[in-house]
Length: 214
Figure (cartoon, rainbow, N blue to C red):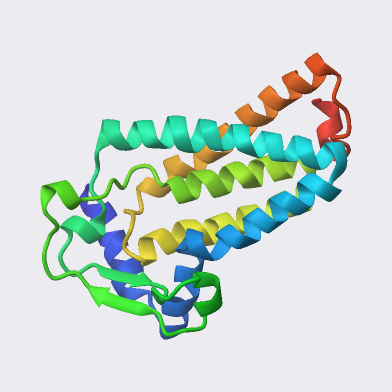
């Protein structure tokens, strides 16, 4: 971590803050909040989305395997960069209420704590890259190949996710640019693999912008 990274982290995590952001941004950092929405969307697309919807789901699954399982987890263990909340005293950690299911408690007061001591070696998380950011930009990239407007909306949501990871104390600012690029690369690779499979097995139904590639 260089001084620029530390200074920018200080601004985002401790200076550029507000009670509204303390409540709003942890929502974007919580997988538990969005998991029921994603599961319901996937089921609905599988049932009602036709061939095009199922190809989209296949593309997302391939992207998750590439981006999250292979790239993200591999780099986390190879780089082994600790999270700021584990090694930087004074980091403000923000999260949603611990009550479950989380989606029913998004309007509860957020939990905001300041780190007072560093975590022991065996309890430190791995900061680089951000799996959250990789996954959301992979999803945005895949969605963009099927529907540009939806992809652009998800890309905007991805930027909020990226910002929230620093704001909530989970990542350093320098983790984000590479994570965004890795997510985009995973999405493009997944779409290419799905396109190959589609041609190989004669699947159709991608429609729209994706027709040129499938």
